[in-house]
Length: 307
Image 1 (cartoon, rainbow, N blue to C red):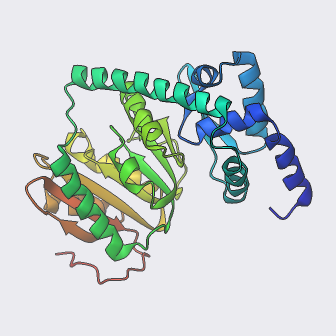
Image 2 (cartoon, one colour):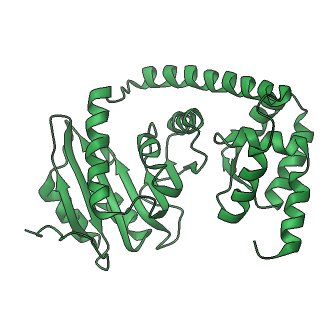
């Protein structure tokens, strides 16, 4: 920040132990007011008052999800750098902060038990460790060929499900927005975010056929095991393309058993106004990993043939 008055004002806001405790907790991921009162042991009105000040100082953001509001750390680079610097100066063995950490762990444990129950009831089984490792390696190798590490400013993960893409790509993107139509699955994804400490990820309600974002809003869009279960896969892909910036990339992942075939996916990609870059079928656990780009994309390697 170049404005001295703004720096002084932000430092004034940060100069309060309650607000620093809230920021420390939110450094791990999104939390509700109720959860933050559990972490700090403070009354809800007091917590809400401090959260309001932090939002006004533009170091926190908030997302409404039906009857709940989730707070998160903002990723404004200058403000976040200052906040992180202040948090790093806090004593590591501070009793109050350590107690907050224990309560936060208890909240995460509660969430994870609830997630296990939800997934069992819905009959959803995550990929085996072997399969996930193979998928992750294939995606990383593909992205390494075309996208410099940490080159993604803002990424949208459509139909985030269990949040697999968030875990994999949080280190490559400055900010990730994940959308999911199922409230239960949003809880699953948020639990993954909190458990992994992915503070640059936020989970929101969203319909893949009618995304609540303007055109050209994201540098990258990912769709992990979405098209294979979509009733209108081509339409979902066109909507993903709509919010993709010129020069951006769209990543589609389909694992073993998916009904999506390479030929039809290429057709959908072209209908969405994108250009196929690379399509990969690698190993028994992967049906397709496909990277496409806006026609203005400048690639570091030659694109594949459209044939």
